[in-house]
Amino acid sequence: MRCGVLIMLVVALLALFVGTATADRPSGVCDVCTYAVENKLRRQPYLCRGLKDANYQKYCVRVLDSLLWWVENEVYWVNYGCERDNNGVKEWVRPCPAVAICSWLQDFESKDTFCNADPMYPKPQ
Figure 1 (cartoon, one colour):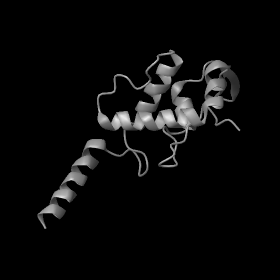
Figure 2 (tube, helix red, strand yellow):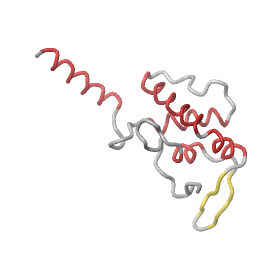
Figure 3 (cartoon, rainbow, N blue to C red):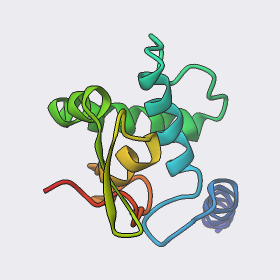
């Protein structure tokens, strides 16, 4: 009996600690993805360095997994840019902002993107 109560308490504490932004996406995942991609844009050798929280480290590894899977697209977005829709006027932005890239990258475990879609940056076809 005590073990079951202890497990429920640990699960509740973890839920409070991580928080949830949506049903599928814990809070902070977008920030972690943006942090890793911005480090990539700055050509930093260690994309997850500086993240103190163990959950953030875990999500950063998931971002790196996704970046490896989408490496051809990521190289294009970083080196050649992407399209931005600014009130109906389409313009090319180089490099793509990290938050736009993270709104296109899919997390393999949750099958969801790391950030919410930004209407200014339509998903490439």
